[in-house]
Image (cartoon, rainbow, N blue to C red):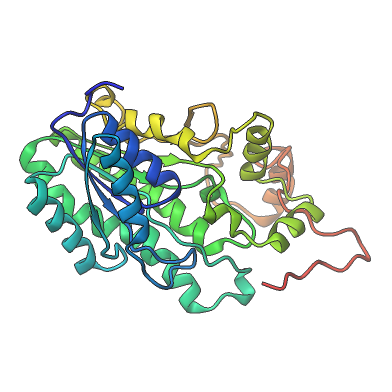
Length: 320
């Protein structure tokens, strides 16, 4: 390791475990002072414990790094303010924000309670806003900042995760909008699709995986996970850390508004959404015209990612 981040201060939400914990260690080993924020709750967001953040801080200090723990919740506006205020009180500045905090409340949408929807968005999407809103004014004053928002490949859509997928896709739009707003102040903003075997991935109900397999649902997540499992230890969450920390360095100052995959061995760049096909008419469309044109032009070759069961076979209904 070197001192690429010497003199910098980083705040990592959800830094007490999983991928966030590895990012905290790598930041510290590059000379960065780190605030490890973690509420210490369960995967579904309930409960609280100082143990995860304290353990991560102890590991960093044992390696000669500098770190302090924080236990406030990102899910409230005031909680995020306390986290940023604690960082400034301890170190006097804030250069890097990594929002990794997250929870899961997986449920098929027809079984999902309002609280299961709200709680996931509060931590992931509202948490991103809360943290950025309080951190950015200080970065603007410094004319420097690095923001990394932990989205997920589940943003592309996952059965049984309507709440999680919505929050994660929202984070991508948030990151892209922020990148445009903050570029004049030398602040970069990127979203990452991390991955690895953590307590969150282990918490995905087996029934959801089974139903997707039975129905032939081929999501991007399954394809990437299958490719990653083909390499020994590819699901080690630590593999994300150097790629994410690179985005926090001065060398990455030209990278902003991007979505970058960090799971496994590769580092991948996702293309922004753009128009791929167009049909045009000088005047209003009729349904008869679209009946003819759509299958032979705009939607030709499109594959249903979740085809219905064969005739006579009842759809599988999950318990969750």
